[in-house]
Each structure stands twice: as C-alpha cells, then as structure tokens.
Length: 169
Image (cartoon, rainbow, N blue to C red):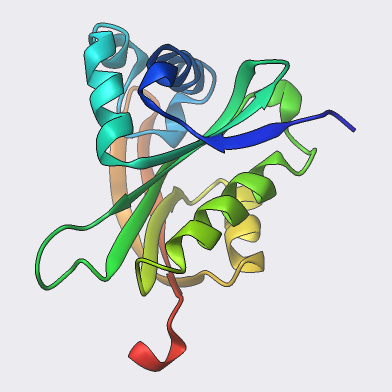
C-alpha cells in the first residue's frame, strides 16, 4: 500500500494546489466547471486566495500532491449551516487505493463541527464518485440536465446532499 499523508493545505501549498488543479483539468476536463486553458493563465496568488477562503485537503505521496478536495462553507446569515464540496480529484495512477475515502472522511470530520449539511454535484457518468458519496451517506436529491457544456457536448450533474445533523431537517 502506498504511504499517503493527508493534511489541510496552507498558503505555502499554493503551487501544489495549482499543480493538482491543472492536472485534473488536463486529465479529466469533463469533471470540472472550469478549463485548463482558463486556470493555467491564472496567477499563483489566486490559488493562494482559494486556500485562504476554503478548507482544502490534500493527499501527498513523498511530498508530491496526488489528490485534493475543496470544502467551502456558505457565509450568508441564512445559509451558513451549509457547505459545498468541489474540485475533488485524485491523480489516475493513485486511484483505487482508498485515497478518495481518506480525503472525504477528513473533510466530513472537519464539517461535523461547523455545518449541518454538505452539498455537491457530480457528473452523471462518474459512477465511482457517486458510489463513494452514497457509501458516506450522501443522498441524490436531483439532476441538473445539461449542467455543463463543452466541445464534447452537454453533461448532466447529479445533485447530492449529506445531512450531518439529522434533527435539523
């Protein structure tokens, strides 16, 4: 089994975050709302800013980032009880080793103390991700048809939610 270190990213990890984000956009563009062409032109400071305003957890193998998940809590008075997960990506050669589970569990553990529900959307063809989310208690509450459009056409997204505080809904 590959030794993986899971930890929250800090401002000093901006270059690693940029690296894994661009890798995801290059290898699996269908999974993201942005594109490699757009993100590769963004300054490093923008990636540092994302780290400062989100909880971003990375998976490292021998000090190289191989996976990432982003957790962003809402800030409005009436919706601060919610958060979103996005930008979840594992390098292809590291998939199937439980890294996605470790990253998701780390975020869910963090979320227990600050939100009541977590929302996410996942491309409808990403069966492995949907299974992972269901395994951790996420429920499908809808589908957004034609959620993304690219040169390969339209893609639907599955909308999922996890209620952390069962008494709150």
